[in-house]
Length: 248
Image (cartoon, rainbow, N blue to C red):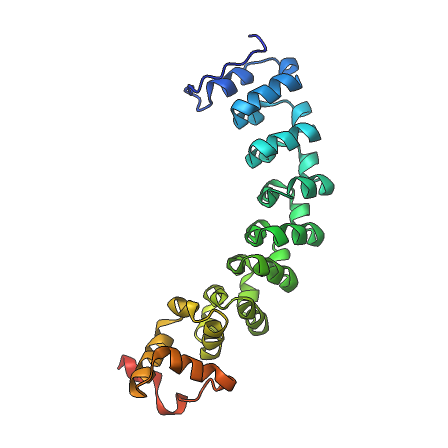
């Protein structure tokens, strides 16, 4: 086979494109030719899967491959996947490549803080220790409140932590533990810090109660909730209504 790789989009029975299949059949010496590899990966990033160690361990080649497709980092050498400076550099524009890095780096406070500032939901790739770190989870939430979904169950059931999380964005309550979601105080704080957007995620028994109260006092639901929130008068009407009444 010549060094001129075809650009046909035909897919072989192996699931590889013709380009990737042709590259896989080259000798290791020819696969290690950077010009041949670069031409091949421009056509199909899957050639990374059959690239020789010399290619998978080449910083410049892997940087180039990642620019084409971040999944290429999956096939990089273990040495590069465990290289702090390299991963930090290539994650500037594509922070989600942290999923392919070594566990040691996924457990690095310094690297994960760099990643989470850019993409909070990358918390799902972090180590168990990191997802239980209050400061790092809150850092992730400042980028994207949905990050709380990937925090440890312990943090999701931590009153003080969830309070801080809700302050960042009220909608984060939907990812807290059931115990906290069933607490009216947190439901109201969630509504306050989301401009009532979190209403759709509030537990049904709490919503039923407030709908009933709004009807009893002949005021709009919005005004009722604002009154309950104002000056922390969270339990203003509680003494007059037994929530179990609705389910008898």
